[in-house]
Amino acid sequence: MNVLDRLYPYQKEAVTQTFYNTKGIVCLPTGTGKTFCQAAIIANDITLNPNQHRVYVINAPRILLTYQLLKETYNFLITNGIEARYGFVHSGGGVDEGDLEDMRALVNVDGNYIPFSQIGSTTSVDGVKEMISKAKEGNLPIILFSTYHSVDKIELARKDGDQPISILLNDEAHYLVQEQFHSIITELTVSRCYFFTATMINTKSENGRGMNNVDTYGEVLYQMVPREAIDLGKMVKPRIHVITTDGIYDGDDYDRSLSRIINETYQQHKMVLGEDVKAKMLISTKGTKDISDFISSSEYKRLLGQGVELFSISSNDDIGCDINGVKYSRQDFLSKLKSYGEDDGKEIIVLHYDILTEGIDVSGFTGMMPLRTLNKSKFLQTYGRVARLDGRDRTRLANGEIKPTDYDELNKPYSYILIPNLIQGNEDDKENFTTLIHELRDYGFNPSEDIISSSMVNGVPKMDELGGLNEIKTKLPVIGKIIEGIVSSLEDEEDAKLSPLEFMKKMANMN
Image (cartoon, rainbow, N blue to C red; front, side):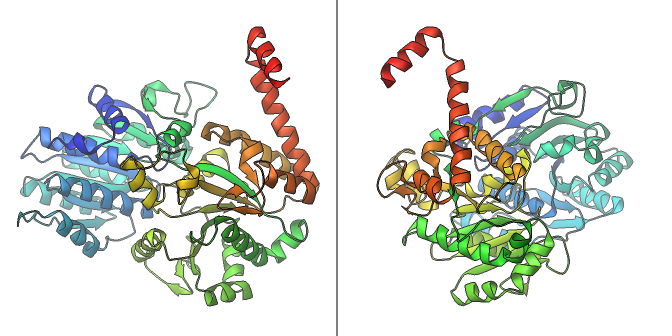
């Protein structure tokens, strides 16, 4: 079987483009299989160069993400009967090899036992050289998973051993626009280099660090906008749920009432989802203090008593990787999070600070709540965590039993963006809310239909399509006024694109 046979048509098209270009950008929305494409690129190169020792590198911005990348790459290769060695180049230590053994057992067919390959880990140049050397002794390809902070070790080891890098894959490549990482692109000597991202970051100058610098990043080889992914049934459509509480919080109240806001938001989110779907809420906090305050609150204990699984993660050692008040290793934390995310019977709340924004493959999130203003890239990456399909929906869509637009048939018809009461008179919050809605237009978002309050069942208004929005306007007139202004400006913008004849036809139809 050709390694590309496992890909969806759009993934195959993206991967095929890399065969004809030694450098370039692949832009795919979160949840559409960027990691699958990366694994296929490496697997294809290995099959075209059998019985050869070759070196491949996959870069990522975070240690947690390197574990996820290894698991998916390992799974793809062994499913295609490809043996390789694997290694981490960062300070996080090795992955739990038992998880990988479980994967391998699942793909053994008719006693065809695929040999286990050692997984190394190092933070030193000598350690990288040793991992490469062992793979070379066995005449096996090796795939190194590195953070952007540690990838310089690979280049030094490569130079010292006169070892070429066949393919370099940069995951969440928008990070390379940052000054601290940008030099990586020119410092590493590679034959082929590709950049994978869901959110390209460009600069005004085409000669700057932005991804519109063709000399640095190459051409855009393949790009899919989120609306296309939603129409294909690969992502879930967004819907904003404005949380209506007893009052509108100012800055001081917000800090003092954070735990109560989280609890109220979760309860209202549960009500909107209905009894058949368990709420799984992802919260992007302002900092580690938010997480500490919540963990020590009475609401935290109350939610635990109700059976809600409470995950917290931060690079701060005092928080680390915490589940229900117990500290775990990164690997165990991610494993449990993935398991609970896939468990239809589990209710979970996950608080993080700049950790789970990119690439972590956790399905099941039903809603996200940003407690701080996220820039465009951060917001879209965080939203991507909750835009993944429900597992049952994915199966039925793949079998042709339902269509992506059959919202009343889907277990997860929408992915919710949960917004606590906007702060009264805060112009920054109003502007951020407006910007958020404009960003979501690429997802097919319609403010009049996709902004709701809590008087809903499974995301569908009880009375009419505008029922939820009308309630917001009544209870929170400030927000209602903002929304009306946004809708009006969007309509004006759309009208400006029409020809005179098209505009006349639209006005005639309205009358």
